[in-house]
Amino acid sequence: MTDGTPGNAHSVSVSAVVVDAAGSVLAIQRRDNGHWEPPGGVLEPGETIEAGLIREVREETGLVVDPVALTGVYKHVDRGIVALVFRCTVRATGPCDMAETIDMRWMPVDEVAQTMQRVFAVRVLDAVRGSGQPTASPPQVRNHNGSQLVAG
Image 1 (cartoon, rainbow, N blue to C red):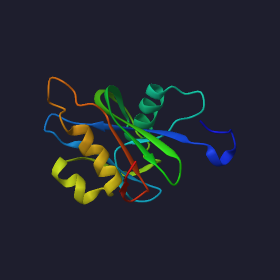
Image 2: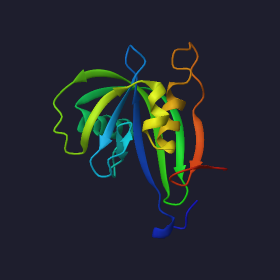
Image 3: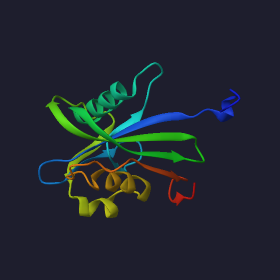
C-alpha cells in the first residue's frame, strides 16, 4: 500500500503476444527508441485493462485482438511500471497509421531472444510457452530493472 505521494505512484502497461498459425509472434519496432517489442503501452486513466490492450494493439498494428490468457506480470522495480502481458488472437484487421511504429513483422520465436531486449524477450517466451497445451501455464511473475531480471 502506498501513502499517496507521487514518489510511490505506479503505472500499468499492457502488451499482447499474438501468435500466428506458423508459430511466429507479432513484433513492432517502436518509433521512439527503435527497439523490437510486442505491441502495447500504458493504460489511460479510467480505461479497463482489456480496452487498453485492444486500443494499444489497434493503434500500433491496425489489428483488433482478443485476449486469450494473462501470461505474465512484470515490474520494472526502478521506474514503478507494472506490465501485464496477454496471449491474444486476431479478430480483425484494419488500417494502421504507423505513428508509433517504424515497422512490424511476424517474428519466428527462435529470433525473439536475439532481436528483442532481454526483458521483452522473456515476456514473449513466457507467453508462448505452453500455448499449444490443453491446460494453460500459470502466469509468470517477474521483476526487472530495465535490462536484467532481478530477484523478487
